[in-house]
Length: 603
Image 1 (cartoon, helix red, strand yellow):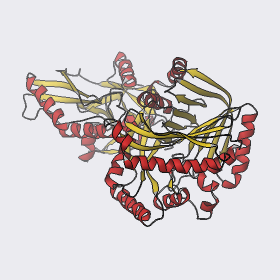
Image 2: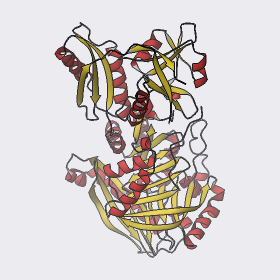
Image 3: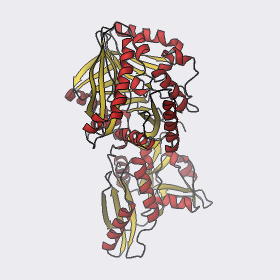
Image 4: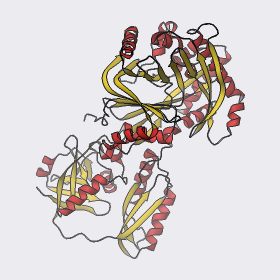
């Protein structure tokens, strides 16, 4: 089945500065330039500068690997790590050319953003990252750190910035996720662009280089500590100050290739800035007058020394040797160019790249020096990834259980309910204490009068529980009927795999079905496959006693009864279509509350 991309926002770019409350919106996409071959780079950059001179605004994204094209000594040393199997090499440079650019204050910018969000489908406005996982083992990481320290002690280098990826899956629209990240992580150099189902979401606090007239400014960031620690400890840390000063010297040398003698100055050294999850140490280096064009500036500065190490070229060689995949946009540059030639490019750390298949990639890393401690560096990297993992899911998880109060084992299939809840909590980032859940359910069962009850458990993102119950009414005698809804689901939406409080569509479908005196109505996916009912899974018996049920790949929830029937050999997964209902011997709808119910399709 072809993967369905998230809805593409109308082509625009947003570069937000939440610290100053002034955001730049680029709109009216007129052209796009993509450079994948280093031989095409001079012509591509010339076209970009020509578009700027002609009065256009540019959004620019440059991959870290562009630095290996710009530096002749690296060109002679082979190719960077290959992308994953089946993946096209990432572009070296992408430029989106817009007809207009306008600055909006915070109030107007948020109103503009909210208007775009309201234009999205309802189910796409709730967004987050599911199944976030590290792309390297801790053991592999520690081995790489040991190798870098050995190279440092051998005199090969002084510092190497070693990075690694994390992977996840987007639910909701990229723009909706960006809105949440903006609220959680205010920064001065944020940026968003969506194009053809792909998106860049950058919450970078670090300025790579900014041009204002003939003045260039760089603000390298090196030195990190947790937000709940004393900032003075970071300010006075010999290790962090040494790292920061080392990178400042490197950038001074790079800027010295562009400015006349005496034209480079350090205007701030080792300042500590506060962010929601970390303290960061930054310095500011400026150069003027600089009259060079974009190509010359990038050749002198790119990539930023804070994300390579020192000496820069040798550090980049070590990075190529030890890192297992291209960095792509991470540690490259992302920003804008104005019609007058001014520009601002960030270092895209704390940046997400979302593909058309909804896969999310981000990277984290740290600077490794002679006295670096591997486990501490690993912990620092995980801390840097918290800008995504600490986003609380804006919904709860649900389990609806059948409770036979008064029985020794009041909850049939309890283990399966708990396993599903725990799995969903891990995937979506909910806190979940299974022992507390189990005790809460038992306490509720103990308070109920003998008989059959419907118990609904809701787990909030912070781990709090709400448990409600009511007597379970008997179903009216059959035959029971079902319909087919006109509503469609997108099978690749990760949230379909979990039972959440985001049930507006299902509630709507069920209300409509009950108004027609139907037990339930079936939903289809974008390919016309049957998925499930609003409150039940579908099972079809073609006459041989084996039940067929739509696979999870069609978008079905793995209902507790469904899982029990599959695990006990009474049901198997198979794609089903409306025509299969016409040929079925018996059609069932089922859930853990009611069991299997024979239904007839109302045509």
